[in-house]
Image 1 (cartoon, rainbow, N blue to C red):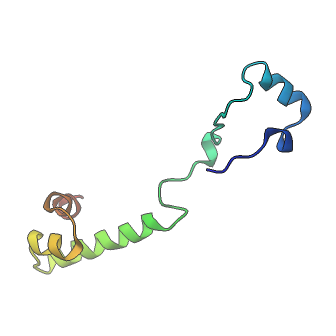
Image 2: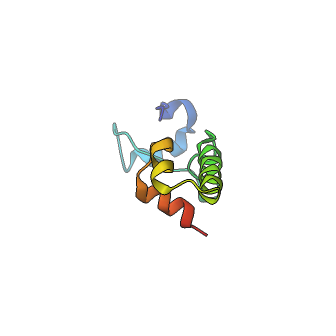
Length: 87
């Protein structure tokens, strides 16, 4: 998260109003609800994990054991079970 100086982006009237509540402190202003993105959607991580999980399911259907998949993908056995048994 980068910091932006309030005087550089906020109108004077709004800045004065905010200063009634807080001065010289760092505050976090969250995004609006409708602009939130799911985790990993911006970086592509969500897509890569979905593709990995699909490959794990296919390998399991082809006969690979859960232990083999855990070793190959460096995941816990319980994680592999969650992936292959999820509907």
